[in-house]
Image (cartoon, rainbow, N blue to C red):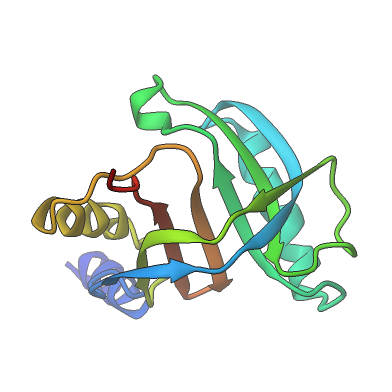
Length: 163
C-alpha cells in the first residue's frame, strides 16, 4: 500500500494528471539542427540523441530548445521512425549536427502540457480529439515535439491546407 501511495504521489508531482492546452495557431518559421535518426523508436540510440542534445541545451551554449522533428508517424509505421533530434530555434548556427531542417511558417495544432515527458502521454490524444472535434485534418510529416523544460512538453502538429 505504501509503495502505491508513493508511486501515485510521484506521478502527480511529475504532472501525470495535467490537462493539455490545445489551440489552432500560426507557427513561425524556424530551424531544427541535430542528428537524423532512422530506426525503431524503442532503440537506445534514439533516446541517447535526446540525452545528448538536452545536455547541450542545459549548458546554455546554444540558443534554442530540445526538440524532435518527425518525418513520419511511428505508430503508423510499425514502430519505425525517421526524425531529427536536436535543437529548435530561429538561429541554430551554434549547434553541432549532421542535418538542418527549415520548418516553414504554417498553421498548426499547438498542444502544451505542464508535465514531465515520461508521464505526459495524453498530449497526443488531446491533439487528436481537438482535430476531430474541429474537423481538422493533420499531417503525419513535420510533427514537432519540443521540450522547453523537464516539466513541459509542446506538440506542434501541422494541419492540411483547405483547398
